[in-house]
Image (cartoon, rainbow, N blue to C red; front, side, top):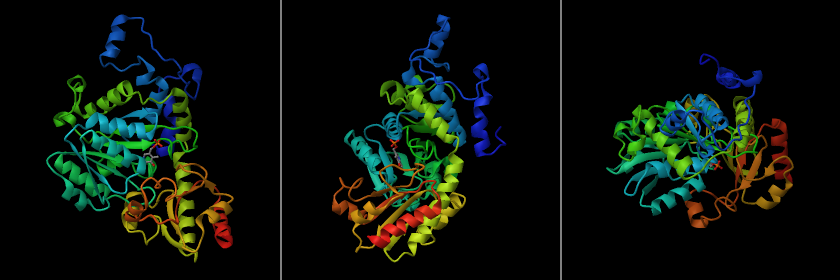
Length: 411
Ligand SMILES: *Cc1c(COP(=O)(O)O)cnc(C)c1O
């Protein structure tokens, strides 16, 4: 099947394994425990043979979603979690220990930044650098550095990390390279092409797409060999060394920390994932139209969108993502416009947090997700009070430009 395209592969993947009663869609497995008629078989599964024991570590339904994500990422294996944050927490806490050093971007997603500050309180040193420039990452590497963590497209500033050059650096220094591809999704480019060791996705965003189920994933690309990684427990040093890291993330993150996704939600996310390519094409086209429209509007001070030639990493984004630039826009309104008055005049745009929904969502960043940071830190990150985050959906493009402009005209 691998010769087929992205969507053909996804919508036909279910039929590759046994189907009960000829059902095209797989059933939702609700059982918490899994029984064996042969005691030796039960014991073998506990000792590492593939199979199911207790649903905290997975069910046939969560495994089906894992296979789907693996296929989209062109990876080797995936573990899914209750949320994107659970996937990230499992990755950091399973692989890092006191005294380790982690390098990440200063433009990182706010909740991930907060998680890393918790990790710092457990003794992991965290350096925040401008990851749009690999030389800043290179300068931060020291003897204790174990991992580099970046996002493909930053939220809400839309900076694009120096993904390929950072991948080369990590390879040269034997560092684990973790890429959060939530904002681009594997459809724009699987992160193994950047040299990622592990790829994290929030399934709550583009992959699910419908905004009615949370989820997260960690995918192993096969590019990292864990043989010399010092923190792999003896119990997980079994079989090929390329699999050890993900096995430890699964055991710690699902079995020990319990960040498990339910079968019901896994099924819903999986149904959404079938249309990822269609939605992304439409979302990216809508976002580019809206960005072009707003960038020349007299009441808009600035538009941040990688598809605009004015974006500092436009060339990089064009090269990496095949001429598509994602669905996230940062829009700075002219100072004279009252942000709240403007927002209250919108009819199509939904005033809500979240990204990657079928609906276009808008949020005043300084007053919401960046509120906790305070004005100084916001100024440092380039977030003025009139900064709006727009997550573009699949509506008809004229309705988006029309709605934004009617609200601007009357505000
Ligand atoms: C939303 C998001 C997350 C967290 O995902 P949840 O599923 O909401 O927990 C992680 N990284 C990025 C870049 C995100 O946008």
